[in-house]
Amino acid sequence: MSISRATRRLVARVSLDVYAGELVGLIGPNGAGKSTLLAALAGVDQDIHGTIELDGQHLHTFSAYERALKISWVEQQGAIHWPVTVERLVMLGRIPHLPAWGRVSDQDREAVENALRVCDCNALRQRRVTTLSGGERARVLLARALVAEPELLCADEPIATLDLGHQLQTMQLLRDFARNERAAIVVLHDLSLAARYCDRLYLMHEGTMAASGEVASVLTAQNLAAVYGVSVISGCETVPWVVPVERLRR
Image (cartoon, rainbow, N blue to C red; front, top):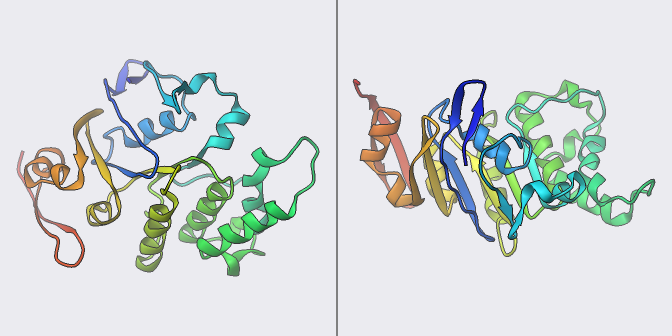
């Protein structure tokens, strides 16, 4: 797959697979093409050169309704345009499940309650979403994505604005989501959390795929020096960790 804007190639000849039961991490420096690629995989950006398939069917053949039932998208710094309550915003994630002019069912309400609970948003439910902090907004938007009960969740930097506790909570939530027939793709900058929670990683650099595969084979000192321009130390005592030490001269 390749993606261009005007005369600039943002993603070049990239291939990526995601299987049921996997949490896959997209990592790489700023401007590497991660968000552009993820938007294409979610069906948000369809101006691509190449093929995206979901369950063996070309993604472009899905209607917007069918795609909304199968894929949820959590945008980086997602915009919120109306001062509705948190509970109402999360309920909007159930729209793909509602019949035309249908009423909200007990099943819809139960799904909303569960999403508010697992994303630690119960205390926010009657707040206007326009009054939320960046971290609170991120948790609410994740709840809206989860309430749709998709097969594939695409999340672009969902922990970027979260405190340490909610970072761990969110990564565990994504890990738990990607079980059985469901999968998730997440853009991350924290390599220690990527190592701890993801099944496989794709390391992007300047619009291309620099490395992919099992965590240990991607997060090597050589790969990180080549892509990020930093030296690192790492280990796996108790949990995997990666710490940048210094920036290398180029």
